[in-house]
Structures are given as structure tokens and as C-alpha cells.
Picture 1 (spheres, helix red, strand yellow):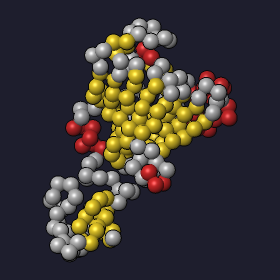
Picture 2 (picture 1 turned 135 degrees about the vertical axis):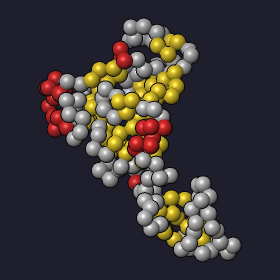
Picture 3 (picture 1 turned 90 degrees about the vertical axis):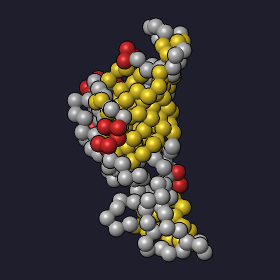
Amino acid sequence: MLIDAKPGRRRLYIYERSAAGCSRGPFRGDIANENNSGARPIGLHPEVSTLFVTRDQIFDHFKMTPHPEGGAFVENYRSDLEVSAPGFPAPRRASTGIYFLLDRGEFSAFHRIRSDETWHFYLGGPLHIVEIDHTGRHRETILGRDIHEGQNLTHVVKAGHWFASYPSPESDFSLVGCTVAPGFDFQDFELADRRELAQRFPEHAAIIARLTADRLRP
């Protein structure tokens, strides 16, 4: 197996030797294999962003808008089914989904919602999700494609947990999906106050100061 970095391109191919050889890339068939005659590209190096997509291209393609917690989003699903659930002031859609995008240096500020929220990794570099639960327990989970290094393709943030997120320093951007059930409504969204949250959880004052809403870049 060979690893080949294409000159001038931020993409690494993983090659497998083949007697017949190959002259096309693994996705669109338009990347010539000039350097590895007889080698067949079978994938991408996990540390490199795929498909040559930029943050601005994603933002424009999905017609995203800024999110109050930081970053950008667009809703991609809202169930037709309405449900009534304990703890909610009114019926909610059974489920909703969004694409959520954070640029390098941005973060999603500490907030909480009334529903469970499942995060899905899509494109870009790894994303850190920071949680503080009802008891004050702190947890940090990394979303990303490198499962051999402990990254996760999905992660569930339980209802009522305070949570924030930010791309890893090496990430140009992170594109994720967020699925909420019962469905998201801004009436169920609470953005943390830095001072109040730090008073409640003084042992986590440093991370709270870094990831609260009055400054949306760390």
C-alpha cells in the first residue's frame, strides 16, 4: 500500500497495487494517477478533508444562515407528525434535522434544549463537543472520521445537558448534522449566561469562559 500526496492539492490517496493499474481517482473519475502506475486508489487518508469542498461553498450551496449560538445552519427536515411529550409547553414535531457548520476559530456557545440531540459527522475536520450534565460532570467527545483514533461518527447529547462545540485546531471547518427528537423549537433553546453557569459549576469556569456567547471566537 502506498500513500501519495497530490502536488498542490490538500488530498491524500491510499493506493492498492493492481496488475492492471488505474488512471482514475476514487470519487469523480477525474483525478489522473500520474505517479503510481499499477496502483489503484482505494480511499483517502483520514486526516485530510475530502472532495475539495470549502466552508464558503458549503454555506452557499445549502443557503445557510447564522445561528444564534454561533456557526451557520439550515434545516433539512421537519416531521409532519406532531407529538405531545412531558416537560414541553406545547406539541412539537416528532423530529427535526439541520446541517450545522463551524469555521476554524468559531464555536457553538454553551446552550441546552429540552430534547435529545444526535450529532452526525459529515465533512471537514474533527469537531469537539463539550458537555456538562445535571451533576456537573464534564465530558468531551470528538466527532470525526478517524474511528481508530477514538473519534465518533455520531454522538447523542441528552436533553437538558449544557453543551458547546468547536472544530479541532487543524480543522478548516466542520460540517455536522443535528437531529432533535422531539423536534427543535427555539422556545426550548436556552443560551447560557457565562456568570450564572460559572457560578453553578465553578470547577469548569475556564471552559465556560472560553465557550460562552458573548465571544463567538475562542
